[in-house]
Image 1 (tube, rainbow, N blue to C red):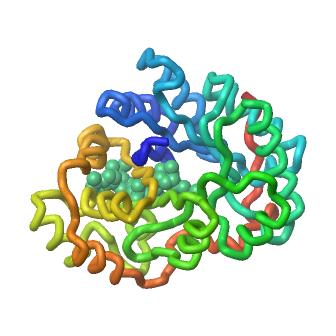
Image 2: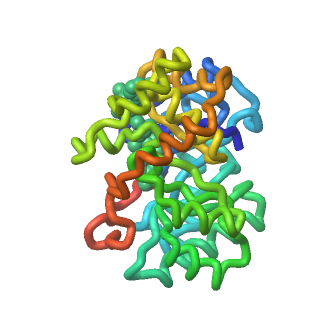
Length: 281
Ligand code: NDP
């Protein structure tokens, strides 16, 4: 899996094709979408328009909680694959744990294991799984999730989840890697883009705050999926391979953790409050 992918959460369908095309032109070879984002079809349109061989681009998508359950999740794969216009998905993950209906979550994961077994997906994983959810999953799973995609930026680093992942061979993938959730949700802890420590490091390297945060993730061994709809930012977020942060700069960013989550609390996700129908292809 390429270490940097383009995220498309909140990218409206009519802007998705342009954003993905800009990313592919820049050099991205990985896109992270989700059934719940409503733009899988437009991601597929962009991939076809770029005319690239299927195995040149890594496609990651997510099954929404309303499609959990063994058969429902198998069908969820069919819906996503058809919208994306592909036979095989590179990485298919469960979008959230359903703590109050964990048996359903396990059935959904068993469906991912079957899809893996059948070669319909190349890898499987999870998202927003906390240590308790991962522990319960590993008790029943036959395949260790390749990836756990979690909220992770300088102001919220989830060290216990990262450590658990590292101990079990689960790659941590950072969502809101440049802290999007800290500013687009009007978070109480301000914008990571305006953080003085990050700004100082950025000036020292002649880079932007976003580039410094992405570099920090990569040097800490994480996968990142920054989102932008703007070609110049899409390019900026990919231009992070020509500098290195020092050990003390990495440590200074590690020290910015506020332990305050910006996104929904994963233990409180229920079908009643977050369920919604994912349309057929
Ligand atoms: P990001 O940290 O990627 O930040 C995105 C925000 O930053 C947007 O407002 C974007 O605006 C802006 N931006 C992007 N690049 C720059 C830049 N170089 N300088 C300044 N501003 C910039 O947050 P997201 O929450 O979007 O997370 C990224 C991806 O993670 C999502 O798209 C999705 O794929 C995934 N995700 C997964 C979740 C999950 O539950 N599994 C939850 C949330 C996200 P603009 O577009 O106008 O440039």
